[in-house]
Structures are given as C-alpha cells and as structure tokens.
Length: 105
Image 1: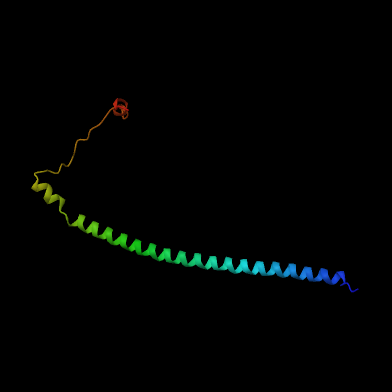
Image 2: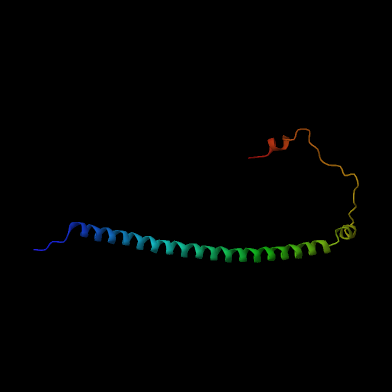
C-alpha cells in the first residue's frame, strides 16, 4: 500500500495555512484602505459644508451690522427728548455683596 510521505503532507498544510493567512490579511487590508478613503471623502465634504456655513454666517453678520449701523441712535434719542450726560452718577454700594444677602433663594 502507498502512503504519502509525512513531510509532504506537512508542507501542504503549511502552504494552505500560510495562504489562508495571506488572503485574509489582504482582504482586511483592502477593506481598511476603503474605509480610510471613505472617511477622507466624508471629511472633505464636511469641510466644504463648514466653509459654506462660515461664509453664510459672515454674510448674516454683515447684514446685522449694516442694519445696526444704519440706525442713528443719537437722532432718535434727541427725538425722544433724551439728553446725553457727560458725567453720569452711578449707583454705588458700600458692601458689594449686600444685595446678594437680601435676595430670596
């Protein structure tokens, strides 16, 4: 009866085992690479969205400040009969925390 050499069988098992490891690592390497590429594309898209939102925010700020600057507060104050005080009197408290001690909890 014929029996294969045991060293030849060990070589085949070793070859199959190493081939399996190689194929598995190649598959996971390609999968990992694809995930990295997808992540980079998502980041790029989000950066474009962020830049767009920042420009919209700047436009809104410009519109806001244009409206605020277009208002003439001094002429409105004169029309309401208000007077600009050069040396205003401010409220002062001897003890800075005296008000806090009388406030209800």
